[in-house]
Amino acid sequence: MPTKDGHLVCRHEPEIGGTTDVADHPEFAGRKKTKLLDGVSTTGWFTEDFTLAELKTLRAIERIPANRPHNTLYNGRWEIPTFEEVLKWQDDQTRKRGKQVWIYPELKHPTYFRKQGLPLEERVAKVLRKYRKDRRTSPVIIQSFEPTSIERLNKLVDNPLVVLLSSADTRPWDFVETGDPRTVADLVKPAGLREIASYAQGIGPTLDLVIPRDAKGNLTQPTTLVPDAHKVGLILHPWTLRNENPFLPANFRKGTDADAYGDVFGAYKAYFATGIDGVFTDQPDTGLLAREAFVNG
Image 1 (tube, rainbow, N blue to C red):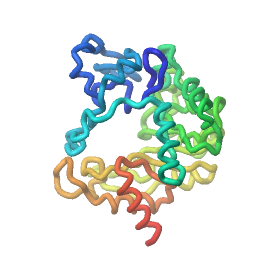
Image 2: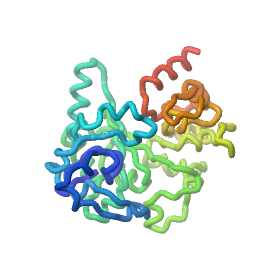
Image 3: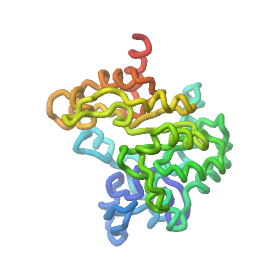
Image 4: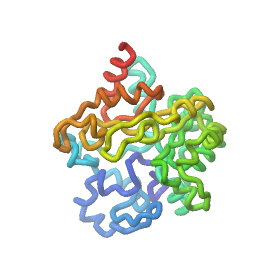
C-alpha cells in the first residue's frame, strides 16, 4: 500500500484499523474516514492518509482474533514494514539460511490507488529495479486480483506474475471500472486462460474454483481448471488453506470451536491430488508437512 508521501508499506488492506493499533492513538482519531473501496463503503484509517513516519509509530495486531486468539500474544511487538525493508529482510534471511528465500507480494486495489494519483505498479517496479529484483529469475512473484494491473506490470518488470481469481460469479474491480462484462467464470474458461497466459505465468484461484463445495460445505469433484490451466502453461497456486475449522470444507472440520483445528492434512491431500503447483496457507509449517506426506505417499 502507498503512504501519503509515496512509500510502499506491507499491510493486508489499505484500511489499517484491523491490522494495527491505530485506534489506540488519540493523535490519529481525526484520520478516521469512510471511503468507497472497490464499491464497498469502508470506515477506518487508510495508509494513504499517513506519512511513513506516522505509520512507523503504529504496531501490528492480529487481524482475526476470534479465530486466532493465541496470535494476540504478539500484538504490539512489530511495526509496519516497508516493501524495501521486506526485500532487505529477504536478502538477510537468504544469507542466514544458506538457501534462497522467495517472497510473493500482492498489489491490493491498484485501480483505487491509481485514481488517487498513487499508482502501485510503477512504484513497485521502481523498487524492484533498485534492488535488481525485476528479472524473470528474481525470487519475487507478484500477484493481483486485477488482470489489467498484472498486464501493466508485465510491461515494467520481468518477474513471474500471477492473476488472483475470486469466486466464479464475481468481476475483477478493474473490469467493473472499465465496463468489461466478463466474470471470473469467463476467465477460467480455456479462452480466458489463454489470454491470461499472454501476460502472466500463473493464476491464484480461490480453492472453490479447484474443488467446489456442495450446499452443506463439503468438497465435491474437481473442476477441469487445473488441467486447463496447465495446458496453456499456467501454474496454479490457489488460496487459502487454513488450519481453523471455519475455513475448512465441512467434511474436514472437527467439533464446533471457531479456533479449533480441523483435519487440515486431509484437506491438503484432497487439493494436492488435483495437481495444483502450490497453495497459499497461513500456516506454512502445516503446509510443508502435508506436502511432504503427499509426495512420499
